[in-house]
Length: 168
Image (cartoon, rainbow, N blue to C red):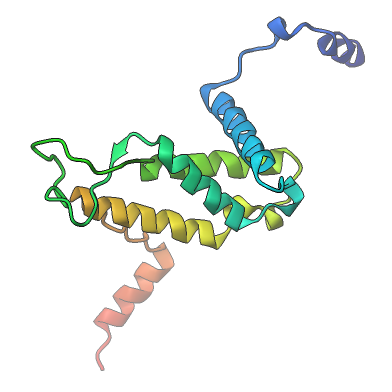
């Protein structure tokens, strides 16, 4: 019975398949865009040759399609969250958009046969780049991003309490 269902399931037309979620559609679109970007390089870059430098170049390339105003340091509106007038500062990809893009590409890389150990989207260099973009955009827009403190485990809380009540 299971074999029959599998055989029948594989002969279904594409219109019978459920529509992919928004996330899955974005992930496929992003993966295809990245693949096209690699093909358009001179010389073309194969996925097996791809490294974090290529990912950084791709992120910089994607920046030109951004919709977020990021004030330059010399701009009179630098550091103002709600500037009173327009300026000539460039539009950039917002940090959150880049972060989401990297997350989708990281997942797509592994779904398409890449190993987690060689995933260029999971590189520390990429995390540092994203942190720098976040900090730079926060300063330019006057929005402080506060680092969240890690929650202590119950054991470390107990240790802290016992240390604070000890008489030295």
